[in-house]
Image (cartoon, rainbow, N blue to C red; front, side, top):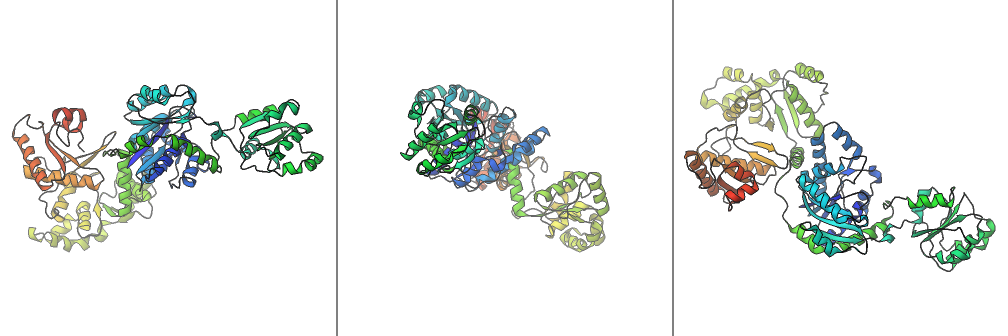
Length: 616
């Protein structure tokens, strides 16, 4: 699944129009396309991109995070949490799609963090950035080059650029040459008719009184005509799309406008200034013209102030103007080069998973599983806080093992309200029911009832027995207990999976741009070649279960055949064993860590390796 994240190079580039135009172009090519706007810079109800994506492009998406909330979280030092929320929102929007088009934040002088936040969201999504520039600025190529450099410095990949509102003199071929490695996706010509508001929009903006409704909702304003001279001197301005403006006592202007309307000229409308009304005698004389669809408005201000207000109308397409937005999207889609789009979509998406995406998917998997998890360190403050978070986010049904009074006191001391979905089990009330079961589990070791009762005083052992008999689905410990104290009961009571000779561990390392799996760093300090091969296969299976494509590097102090020694040969033998057991698994070794993790080094030290430089 491909993600394109559209970012503006400056203000007023027409970002929403271009983003939805890309959606339309991809939909026309037969791709399943979803759309998302992670951060709303307007009130959500007023976000035109959301409305038009849903109404015109038939795309459903989650509501964005309000900008004010994003600002608050950044100010509070909660950037990782914010990014996790934003990436999760985008990934929800991407479900079931071949391509996700994401509209980034508009440039906003009052919120200078927007370019950086755009970069962080794109990085978190592993998205390809598409820059959107305005040809009317006269600096479109420089703007694209500058922003591409900024994005590259943050570790983002710029897939291409689109020039919107390009003047007639703009040369696409020269732009391609000037942009070099940045692929130009298309050039959308400036078309003033696409900016034309409806007379209805002007009436709303001016807070005008509607004297004659006419075709208020369908006629469009292409120009504003102020009637300072006689009617004869402005007849040539009575053309389709003209909004005629004058004082209500200018009967000559009113009659000339009515005459033009009666002859079929599709004027945008007539605006009477100074709060004027239509003289009843004029209304009666020109009734046929007024019935032809000519809208007539009245405003309190004079012509100059009114014209100035019209000139400063926002260019955004109103939410109920679907006809105009359809025309805009068609104009953009028709100017995007389909060969470029197809080439980008066919490129394989990155197999790396970013930390925000990993956390989001992990939580989604946990929610779907809805597991009951026992926490043996139930009176430990961090454990209590974690249980509350899990309850609030629906991650798991947590069971705190410990004295209820102690747990509630610790929670109160931390200012934590324990929700009813967090279960508390006092060990003394359930311990006895596991004694005989534990004796049965350890019968071959000669465990007695008294020994079982004594060992079950340890809440980790008690929790492990709960897991062994299926009363809970999982156990989390280690806040105050050592790894050995946490793992030993599981080895004794649950034992290894059938077909496995050892138990191993992995760490998920959340690097700035991806999540890596390291195994085994906690259980087996000096495994044999056979055990090391098994650890590799177990680690790969765990990575796959958590959505990380396994590319396994068997680490040593030597790469390939560059060195020798007992440890190197053990890694070499383990790699061969693992390949025999899992021929489809991408695995290679021995590899030095830099050859495994750094692409350039891997290409140099192990050029034929399927893993070098891209191990996970």
